[in-house]
Length: 249
Length: 323
Ligand SMILES: Nc1ncnc2c1ncn2[C@@H]1O[C@H](COP(=O)(O)OP(=O)(O)OP(=O)(O)O)[C@@H](O)[C@H]1O
Ligand SMILES: [Mg+2]
Image 1 (cartoon, rainbow over the protein chains, first blue to last red):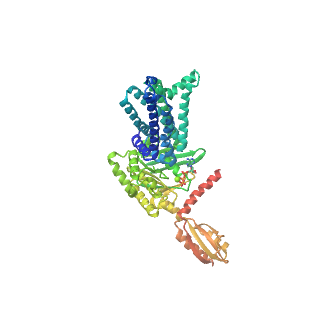
Image 2: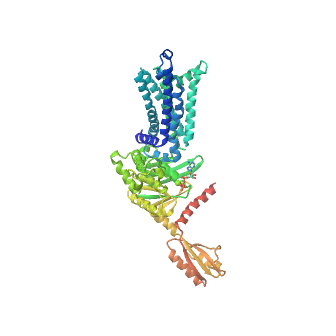
Image 3: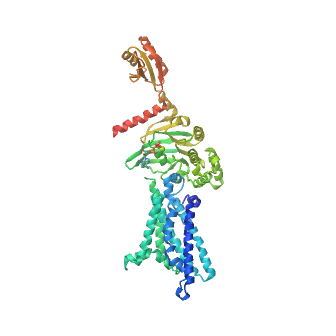
C-alpha cells in the first residue's frame, strides 16, 4: 500500500485540472437531469391509479436505460488515462522507481477514479431531496439504489483500470474497456432472450438491469454483491500482475 | 553503495546487457561510458528497479533490489534519460508530489523541495506548468527530483544531454560536489564529461564491460601514442632504421599522405607510452645519423576519443567473429 495517498491525491488533481473530468461530469449530469425531468413530467401527467406503487425514484433507478447507458461511456473515459498515459509519456519510470508498492499504485489510481465517480453521482441526490419535499420517498429504496449504482460503477471502473494497464494508448484503453463493459452489460440482457437454462441463469446473475430493478424495489441480492466484488477484484488483480510484468519485458 | 554482480538483460533473443559486474562506493563519481545502444540506459534502469534483470544481482545501499525493493529504492535518486514529467503540474507541485512519494517526512518536505529546486536551478520556474518548460529545464526538474530527500546513491542517465554550456558546467559541478559524500553513477557518451566529473569510468560496448579504470588510467591509454615524421630520401631504408630501434613497436609509411615527390610520411608507434619524449629524440637522431633529412616531426597523442573507439571497436570485431 506504500505510496497510496500521494498517488491518489495526484490522480484526483490531474483528473480535475484537465477538462476531461468536468466535461464528463457535466454531460452526465445534464443527461440525468433530463432523465429526471422526463420521469417527473411523466408521473405528473399520469393519473394516480395508473402509477400504482411505483414512484419516480423507482422509475429513475430501475426502469430506464438512461441510467446506465451513459456509464458504458463514462467509466472508460474516467479510467483510460490512468496507466496508458503514464506508459506513453514515460512517467511510469519515475513512478515505479520511487519506493512505492505495486498494489499501492494500482489501488491509488483505482480509488481516484472511484472518488470521481462518486462525485459525479453526488448531485443527483438533489433530485431525491426535491422529491422528498413534494411527496413521500422510500429511503430504503434510495439506499439500495445508490449502493447498487456504486457497486456497478466500482466494477466497470476496475475493468477500465485493467484495460488502461494493457495498452499505451488512451484511446485503445477506452475502446477496449467500453467493449468489455458493454459485453458484460448486454450479456446480462440475454436473460430476456435466452430460454430457461444455465445460460439464462448466468445471464440473470450478471444482469445489471435486474440488479437495478431489484434495488429500485429495495432489494439487494447478496449473491449479486459477490459478483460485483469479483468484477472489482479480478481486474485489479490482473492490473497488479500486468504492472509487475512490465519490469520483465 | 552500488554493487552489481554478473548482470544480464535480454529483450527477447537480443542481449542488451551481458555479464556486467562493478561496484561504486561512497565518495565516488563513476562514469558509465558507451556509444549509442551500448546498454547504458538498460543497465541503469535495472539498477533503479524499473526493469528486472534476466540474471545477476544488484544491491543498493546494502539492500538487494529483488528482495527489498522498497528499501533499496529509498536509498536511490534516479534520473531517467528522457526526464518524463506530468505536464499538468507546476514544478513546485510536481516536486512536492515526488517528495511525498519518496517518503520525505512531512515536516521536512517543503525544505527538501526548496533545496533540490535551488541546487538544480529550477527555483526560478517553480510556479511554471511543466508543459511550458523548455527541454533543458525539464531535464533539470528531473535532476531536482533525483536530488530530493538527499539519497546516498544517485543514478543519472545522461544528465547533461540537451543543456547549454553554462548549464552543463553547473550540473558537472553539482555532481562533483555531491560526489564527495555520495555514490554517483553517471552515464554519458561524451568522454570529456567523464574527464570533467568522474574519478573512475566504466566503458561498455554492445552490452559488455570492455574497460574500467581511473581517469589517470584512461589518460595513460591516451598517451600511448607515437610520431608522424616526414623524411626526405629512401623511405624503405628509413623504415628499416626506425623499426630497428628498441623503443619502437612498429612503423608504417603513411601512403595516403605523400607530402612531396622526394619525401614520405612515416607513422611510428612507441612501445611504451612513458618513454615518449626520449623515443622521439632517438628516432630523429637515428634518421639524421643515417643521412636522411627530417622535415617534420609531429607527436601523435591518441585522444580519449580514439582510446574509446579503439576499446569499443575491438569488442565489435570480436562480436563479428563470434557471429
Ligand atoms: N524495450 C526494449 N525492447 C527491445 N530492445 C530494447 C529495448 N530497450 C532497449 N533496447 C535495445 O537495447 C540496446 C541498448 O539500449 P540502451 O537504451 O540501454 O542503450 P544506451 O546505451 O542507453 O544508448 P543511448 O546512448 O542511445 O542512450 C539497444 O540496442 C536498444 O535497441
Ligand atoms: Mg541511453
